[in-house]
Length: 401
Image 1 (cartoon, rainbow, N blue to C red):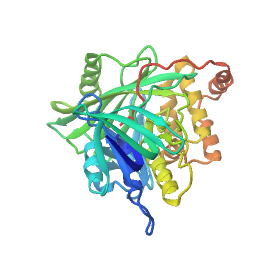
Image 2 (image 1 turned 60 degrees about the vertical axis):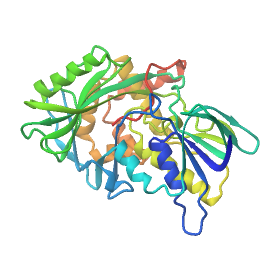
Image 3 (image 1 turned 30 degrees about the horizontal axis):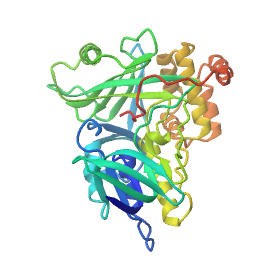
């Protein structure tokens, strides 16, 4: 069977659903394109529920769908020091994938949604074909002028690569144990591994409830038992939660790499989201960059600009600085806990978040650079161009919570 449309979007995660909604919400007087969304059938190809965090000023497009938001965050040094930083006009926001999917379902009027596994995408002179197979085993060919593929790819060769891997517990405590107004962004009171670094991450939902996560930057993910031991230690010995109950879990691994993600796979085929380089290499955050990419693509389609290629998710300057930091952590020249603790202690948190979002000015970035170990960073920057690009370490480019 063959079907035709204007646009096929592959994948129904943050990028696929966001792009489909923005394509189907054109300005007044502009015709919405005909969009087909291909989602994997229930099973191993469909990801489990996950958490996305981002920051923005004021109320955003997904405000009614948020689980929580905060106006303060803290980075704790290994000795426990570290004050809470007010974010000013910014808010740190938490969005669960199921709430996102339910909320967007109401906004996707006119969307044709197909559950199928994509077997191949073929570019042609006037469009592209997506060959897929439904859960019933029937083959289906979708033809479209443009195809946007959000499936996570294998990370490309890179000069420097770490894996950010984590496991989190949603916990409910018998006593009030959390400050519901403050995110513990990085808590370095965790035992540090021989290679890389580790930290705790706490997203409080109420005085009694939070997402408590153990994260490492390292070479490869750990066995589940190791994460559970680290989480028990962090909850009991560091946070002192007292009796608590685990109500849910999530786990992931993110490639932190300076590999170059191609946003174009053909004349009519493009990659978006993590597949298009939306994950920030130094942090794993991606949701805000995904929204920028999707808005830009939808604007290009609605105004008739050809071809509607997704823009770079992050500025080149920021990616270059990320590569230096990752190499510094990899070689051990940069002490991770000391680096991040000092940075958040000496630089306004709002300015750091603007930098991580790619909206900071060169002067701000220079001031941030002066708060880093300058000699080690300069030595690392000088050697980076001499390093070969190699196959990456294990880890998918899925964004972190």
